[in-house]
Length: 394
Image 1 (tube, rainbow, N blue to C red):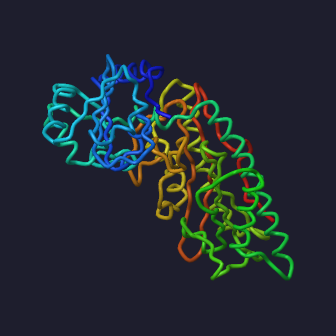
Image 2 (cartoon, rainbow, N blue to C red):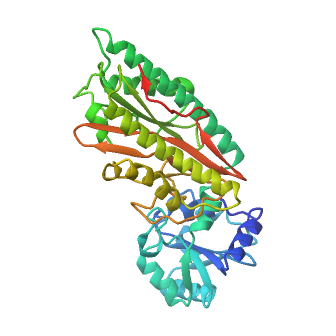
Image 3 (cartoon, helix red, strand yellow):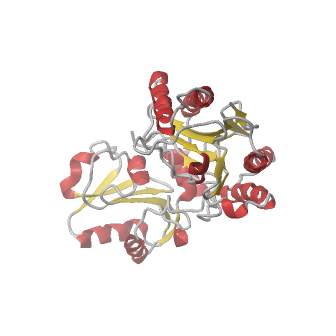
């Protein structure tokens, strides 16, 4: 279903006007821009360049190739469809549409935000040669592509509570098995979680991560049936799991446990990541309550500062959190990031993301805590309802 319809057009045009723009120029070639395709409602593959111009006032205009008209049957008849075959015609149409105008495109200056940087340099040159000034569409993308509906929030909350219960059950089971003659392996525990997803009616694009001991120092570790690592007494265990109700936003969490009494080293690292998570949440809530719109980069800075003060800064090697939009677990909305990228996009109401600081000491130990958050009107919703504050001892 298209995000741009006669019903949604007035709201989109108000946002364009509020941003001081003359329009939003959407571009796609061979499915390289899922944002543009979702906005205009393209579901079938296209093999030629397409544009759609949403002006501040008046009706949108599609720019389509003559041989690909069937995929545009949904385009409202009252809106223009400018067709081309020759490149000269395409450039002439663009000139008529955007000359002298300030337009937004899926473009990030200096590639600061790769998730948003969907427009090739050559296309930017072509649009600028047509007489337009091009700026980033970042906040438009956040507001109309990445934001959650009320139904999205409700579905996410249900999924979050379900996977939290599944994670706690898995850790308890690992602890029980560790004290028998047949401890469970990382891989078998991963399969147990996946089967629990199926019973709960949840879907996922890839299996969860179960990491024991030094394996958890690799943030993208994957258990293997060929090299099984057993979960035994004394192990630190990290479970990272993600799932969703069909076609709704993912819930994505990380839980930490120790089989037996934790060492002071483990406790020290846990306190640092837990404090970093809580600092991010506190900053978000403080600014939202004050009527301010926070930025992902500022939240990352606040979280990272806690780990740096604890002396573990060099071991926090990734951003504090990633966008979760209604379609993808690593979405196109603002990330909680001022490390990997310079993400200064606004965390507008309806925007969801993870908060997941971690510390990874290669060959020794890895710890992460992860919750999700959604910016609401005047508030911040954090999931699951009961987040982890202490290392789970099983």
